[in-house]
Length: 74
Image 1 (cartoon, rainbow, N blue to C red):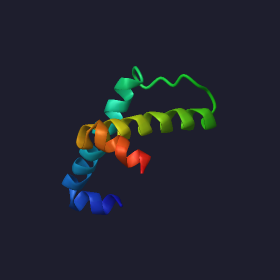
Image 2: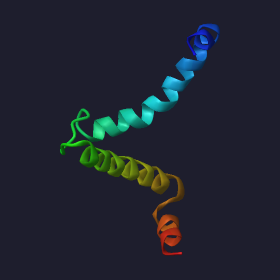
Image 3: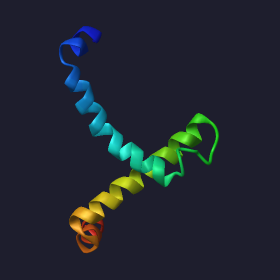
Image 4: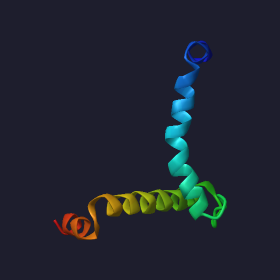
C-alpha cells in the first residue's frame, strides 16, 4: 500500500478531504468528540445516533421537510 501511495500522493489527500468534513461536523456537534457514555457498545450506539442525525439533517436540507415526511409516511 505504501508503494501505491508513493506513486500517487494526491490520492490520499483527496481521501482525507472526503472523510474529514462529516466527521469534523459531528465532532463539533459533540463538543470536541467527547462521548457521554462508556464501554464500546454504548459509545458505538452514541456515535451511530450522531451519524443518523447528521444524515437526516442533510436529507432535510436537500429534499425539504415536507418531502421527507411524505417519504417517511410512505
